[in-house]
Image 1 (cartoon, rainbow, N blue to C red):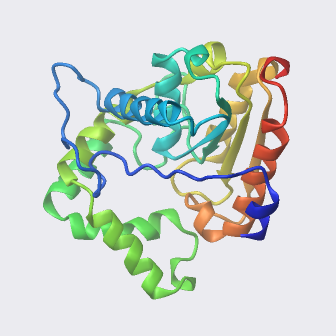
Image 2: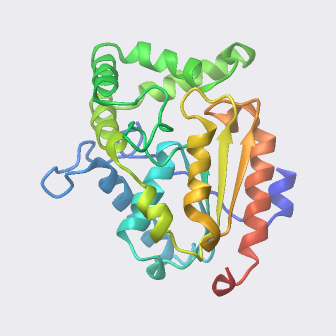
Length: 262
């Protein structure tokens, strides 16, 4: 709280994604207009940003995407011109590789979602036993879930159970096949610097896979990798104070700079 009070951060918006429990919207989008679930979520983000712009509530903004949230940001920047929304001044990605599936030239993706067979197993679990999936979430995404307060773990499970299982399966089917390496290497706007965070003990992605983002961005975009060595996928839960310091300090450093100088 004191950190935020002293920083340049004035407001924090948290989007409840379509199909994740609270959003009052069509869960499964029209496949004719939105054949790709990730496209629909990117459009949802764009519509949200437009609403803030119309209210003059988005003068300078850092967008933060954790796991699939990072891929939604990549999809957004692939679809919409940065020049239309120049108030996005920086971006933070949290423990996500640019491609989930294995390919001949890529072995650094997801540790558990490497091919269509893995996806089929996940979709079967979501359909047959959503409670088991929700209960196993913390085990997959935390180094030592037993060290957290049990009520907190139960709350995480309840939040997961809010999600629509069919939607999650369809969303993962789209998400896992998308390769964002070309966008990061050639299309990510140089005016949007990137902080890339990785869990050193993540059971979801290898650090080298997350680090590939920085290599792809190269020298044309300011970017920095920070590895939370003792954390897994949900590093913001395991080291919340460190996470907040990293993100807020990054925002303060870059939101005080002129966009054209980045």
